[in-house]
Length: 318
Image 1 (cartoon, helix red, strand yellow):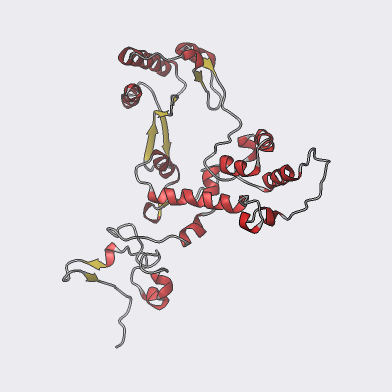
Image 2 (cartoon, rainbow, N blue to C red):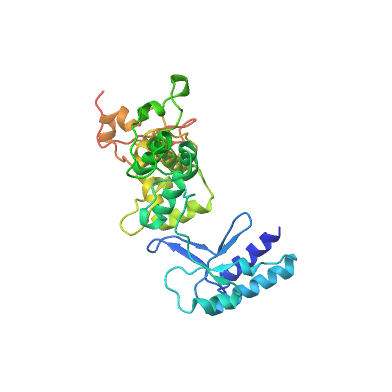
């Protein structure tokens, strides 16, 4: 309840123009404004590097302490610059905290293969060397040939790069079921593929979640909002690009349960049977007057209890 007070104060300060927050927008499309993020016992406040904004934020924190009876430990708080910021030390003094830096190693990335330069691969690799193989997969959520080599060396006890030992068992056997005398270690590439696909599913199924709003604002929507547009060029880096690479096979395995039918393609989505109607009836699909029609568009509820109203570019002979 106390943190809710802080959340309201920061949000209203951003709405009133007293602090800037973070604006995420693609071209002139819909924008998402984020003033802060709340974690278990931590808060991140997004603010443009202007002294007046930091002064206002300092007052917000003071009012929060007065309203809640809680106290913020500014000695553990940090001002973290994004990019080059002039007089950052002066900004930190305004709040009474120290200057911090962005971390260079992330182990708890959402999913996907991280960019080597962005995620500090050397630090990650060193941590992986000290972990058992299956725990590595479950915790880090990313894979690659290098990680698989580390896991293999762990099993056979290899040390330095120059030390080589014979692998007495094939890796496929190691990854086999325990019932078949394998070790039950999951295959990195297959599990990573499944985890990436899970995020495609979450984007399609989740409704009111902040992370989805951010992605929609940054990349835009397509296919009635079931997925984002492709991340092209400098628009989008790292994790989400890797997730989008798995969209194809993931959507081929999905089906729809018709509700209102306003977000389901009549011809190309799988909603009636195990395959899209365009594949089951290709000749009708070619002759359809509107191949992009939604289920809602072709259902006429004014006919009896309702009936289909399909339109084609020519009549059919009896």
